[in-house]
Image 1 (cartoon, one colour):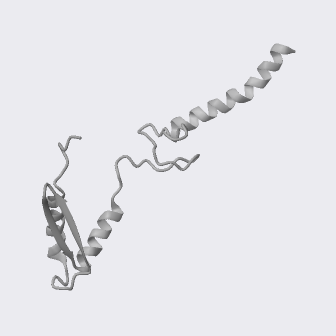
Image 2 (cartoon, rainbow, N blue to C red):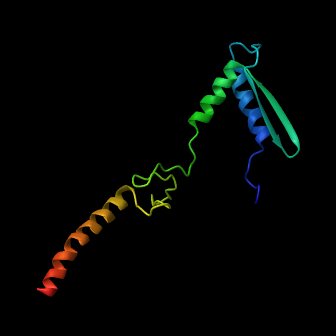
Image 3 (cartoon, rainbow, N blue to C red):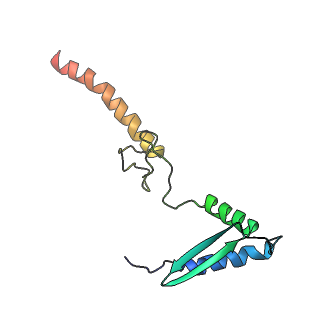
Length: 120
């Protein structure tokens, strides 16, 4: 697996702390927890003040993966591709999915009538 383009987790954590720490109203507060990150043999352990813990929680809660396109209305799966096609059940979502579903329903309803015409 290539690591090109993958940021150093320790540098990311240090950068986050440096952007949040100046606004900590109680920088000397007792830590409420710690975060430990290891990368390439190095380990960084960061004590979390209440302010830093809230900021980290908000940052993680607000993160949305670029591949997250919601859930499938049919099966509840989370693997919708860029065309909103569910990899689990095959349903298409969005405008294209609605058009295809409508067309498929129209064809399904016509099929019995056409079959009756051929036999009758």
